[in-house]
Image 1: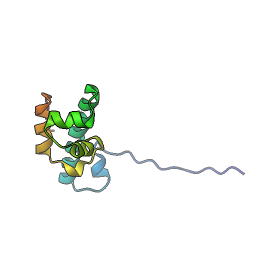
Image 2 (image 1 turned 90 degrees about the vertical axis):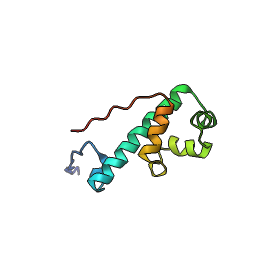
Image 3 (image 1 turned 60 degrees about the vertical axis):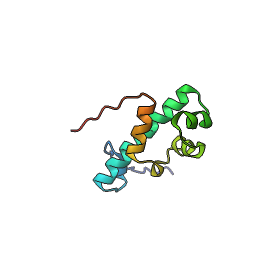
Image 4 (image 1 turned 45 degrees about the vertical axis):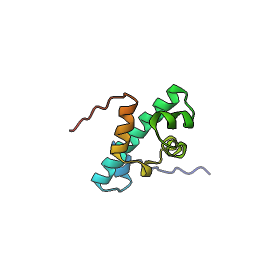
Length: 97
């Protein structure tokens, strides 16, 4: 016998951290850090660098680059990530709405 199950789908917002219950301020900070880490990770992958080569370029340790490559957002502040973005000569566009 086949039974029909109804699945309820709830559309999320544009910030998964808010959807997970973080306060609006904390969710915004987590999203910004995640977005910056993803861009830096893509930069390193596009260069084809090893973690050691990336560490040398950014003047960081290899374990620190490993944290970045594993998207360990708890290890990075927005300020630190912006310094790394600047070192890579990348640009940041900020929109407030």
